[in-house]
Amino acid sequence: MKSILIAYNISQQNSTKMTPYFLMYGRTARLPIKGKVLSKNTLLDKVITLVYKLPLFKESVRIAIKRAQKRMRQDYSV
Image (cartoon, rainbow, N blue to C red; front, side, top):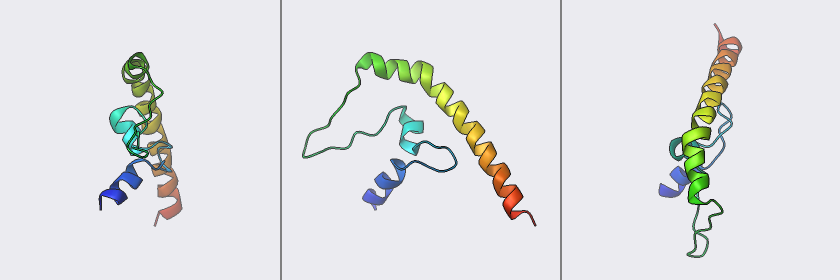
């Protein structure tokens, strides 16, 4: 079950165009590869992403969700 949850959290969603993991933590998931975790981001990069970029990403996700909801209402209206 844990593998399924990880797969879901790192998969890009159609409605948001982002991964749930990124929206929750403000960074892409770092998966262990043969016992090592690879990271290219410095601490400053992480802080900049959390403080400045994450709110912008979340706003774009809100807009994408609203668009997806509108499209679903049109496609499935009774």
